[in-house]
Amino acid sequence: MAGIHRIALIMLVSAAVLSAAGCGFVYQRPTAERAPGDTPPAAPAPGTGLLPFGNPTNATADPANADNYLIVRGSAVISYNNSRGTANWVAWRTRARDLGESIPRSMFEPDPALPKGFRRIGYYDYSGSGYDRGHLLPSADRFGNREQNAETFYLSNIVPQAGDLNQFPWNELESYARSLVRRGSELYTIAGVYGDQERIKGKLTAPTNCWKVIVVFPRGQSVDSITNITRVIAVDMPNIEGIADDRWQKYRTTVRAIEQKAGVDLFSTLPRDLQDRIETRADGN
Image (cartoon, rainbow, N blue to C red; front, side, top):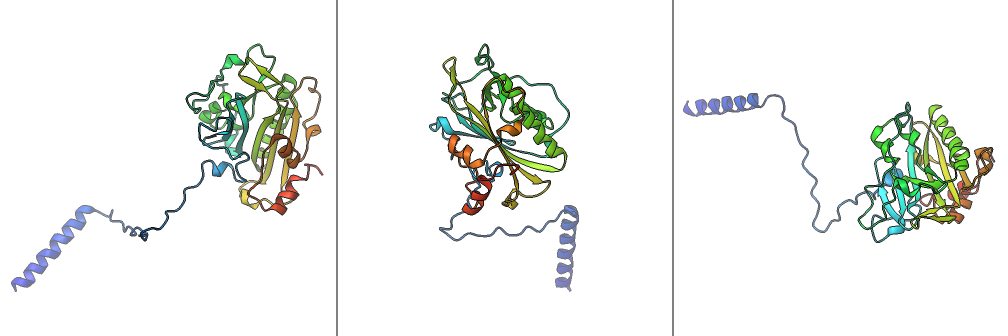
């Protein structure tokens, strides 16, 4: 009889403990054990999500690689060139949520992500140069997020552009690209520069050309689904005055031509036959 009472007492105590714990008991699946010597899963490379087709210049986050230095942010990836004082290229995605109503302009400022010892390009380095402070990732592509919009004014995202280029065909292509997003597309874009037109104040290089490649997807479609009929817009524009009346379409070219002139490899993760089809076909042809 005493044994029965002892069992009943144990059951009552157990019930009280469970009651005190409430309904928050959660079964936790045991962590899978790894055999000694097993290699843990590799972490994704920095910026992989924003570089779905590969790192165009194999940029790295090593300060010793100062002219191809990788900066990864939530909304963009940059290959920065310390010798030029500008990016080599900037890559980003544009979706409907990234757009929005115009917001007050931020101040142009040095990029805080640059390592110690790198040149700090400032607002006044452009003053009196005759060039605009031209965005690679446009400010209006980030009106939907104030913090990300402010990042577009870091001078790592800015290049010296002739006023006629920056304010006319380059700007018109930016506006056209956003109109595609408003009509139901999503974009993967990479923009960059090449060529040395002149040296500004001994620390900033004005490029001879500014280029851009835009991959257009239906909203919600994965970039992995790119095919040989996916629309790809590639332009290569001269960084000169006198082109204010030019339409952006005048400067359409092929991805392959940009790769050869700028020294980049823009679709390295794709099969070679698909690269050949995408990179040798100009938009509109």
